[in-house]
Structures are given as structure tokens and as C-alpha cells.
Image (cartoon, rainbow, N blue to C red; front, side, top):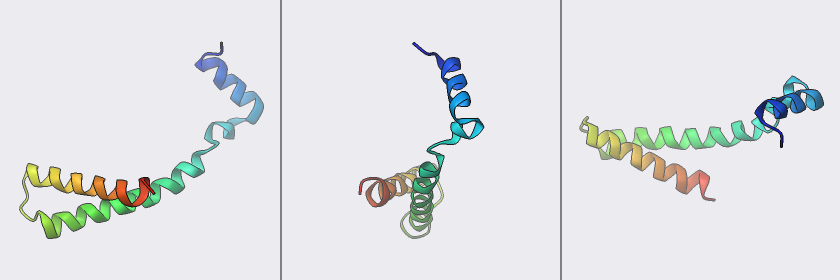
Length: 76
């Protein structure tokens, strides 16, 4: 069984340094729409739904943003 060090050596031997970043493009492409929806939903909630600044409203804005992110980007 190959440990973490053995796997790193094998990856470097077969693919070079850039082998460690294989699949990173897909992560970045998926992260951009998630972050866009999350931040836009948080700003919408904080300026329209929960205008008073307190820890509970900040939590609810984050909850709203996470639900929007899950419904719009992650689930479909």
C-alpha cells in the first residue's frame, strides 16, 4: 500500500510538478459561480431582508446565501 509520500513521488515521476494540479481547473470553474451566487445573495439579504446589523441577522444572511448557493449552483 502506497502512503502519502509514495503517492507524491509516483505523481511527480509520472506527471511532473503539474501533475499535482491535475483537476484543479474543474474546481476553479465550479467555484466561480458558487462564490458569485453566495456573495450576491448575502449582499441582497443584508441590504433588503435583514437590514439591522447584529449577529443574528448576519447569521441569517449567511444562511440565506448558503441556501441560494445550494439551490442555484450546487444542486442542479
